[in-house]
Image (cartoon, rainbow, N blue to C red):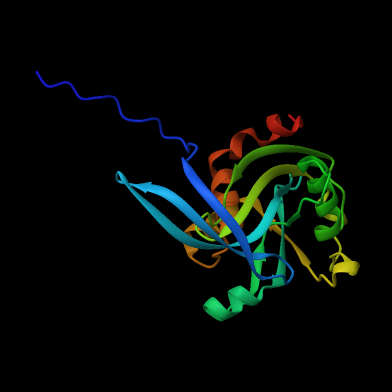
Length: 210
């Protein structure tokens, strides 16, 4: 009787590599760097050249008003989306960067106020992910937050960053339905809506609003 070995754990793991770098390719808003990576390639040592854009840690918010059964999203122009698809006026979840010395929860509360114009009543981290590990050094913390959607302004955004966001109120079921409609393509939004669909019935318990 053949016995199969148990499958390896489905988990990311540390890699045994040697790094040399970085070489700065461009400063810009974020650092663009080139690294030399020494790695074991099937028993043969190999050296790879890899370019990355330094983004750092970020936060995203699934902002819900359970009393009104709504989620608050935003619209804003994104050049990369415009160049990729011709549809640069995209729908997103509120999101932003974690500043130096700031903990993720504090960044989520600050970005919530900046991006949709209201402070969160409650918040809870629900998952983390790496948006594009092949190119971006970015690590995202996603929070479920409770807001009063009736207080959402027509326009928001941090004035010192020349940021212009347009908050929009959407029924939660309509937002989840967009997953199958193919009308939105933003990664942060798609992952957040998938999480929302899976956890629709326990939002109140997670936020302490049952």
